[in-house]
Image 1 (tube, rainbow, N blue to C red):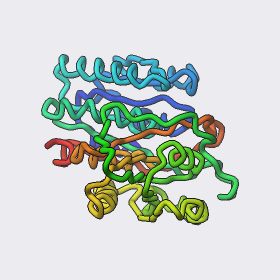
Image 2 (cartoon, helix red, strand yellow; image 1 turned 90 degrees about the vertical axis):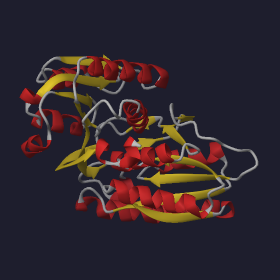
Image 3 (tube, rainbow, N blue to C red; image 1 turned 180 degrees about the vertical axis):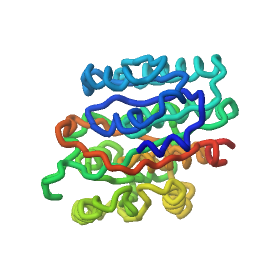
Image 4 (tube, rainbow, N blue to C red; image 1 turned 90 degrees about the horizontal axis):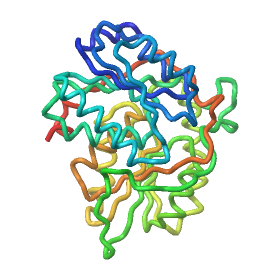
Length: 318
């Protein structure tokens, strides 16, 4: 983990999200604190203990903790925007974000805000700690779960899309291990066509058996929607550009359809979803809100960190 520091410039603003997941600590604990000019720890007290927030913030210099209400995306966007504006005013040239335990919605909102400042910062590094296991290390695949139920589905702020009543709706799901959320999405959106993306190329080879099991379960589940023109495709869980191409290949088949894209897999493939939407603003991004998280056994951290500089790709900067 300490080897990440050779990728990190000096005088950075560091963002991370405190969470019930153990992975939320890995990068902040490996970070050379002398490189950090300002740090921001975001958290929702409904899902994070004050002890975890203190543990992370206590080792970061000039650290501010920001309590954010997961139920209020407008508040989330306002807090993120004020922090980014403050960093810009303080002439900080580089941002490092531990994206690991941001929710998909929080990450997508933050990416949208940062894109407005794409000419301001030299580097916007996203760092991701992959999981070694999900749903408990000793739990067989058929008993693993990450979340249960789905309270609601909402459009993600900044990605409204353009839905034309005269065209058909295609729902693109980047599926993970959460079938109840996927089911609720279909019930609420009632799409004409469904494209279910199954993750390949996992961030940790130990996840392959669990992934294979859930692909099988999704194939059985898909039979319930056979009258809705349902298709499968594969995308990379860790290669952002490969995931972008997989999504674009679905869209190009019927470019006039309305597209609703829902990332339910890794945060790396969530970045891919944002990059696709930046290039095609007709695409709407949505977030399904779970009823309950598997707080005790959501994940165990792996020892590999992926680093991606948003400013290195024209998909973000143009």
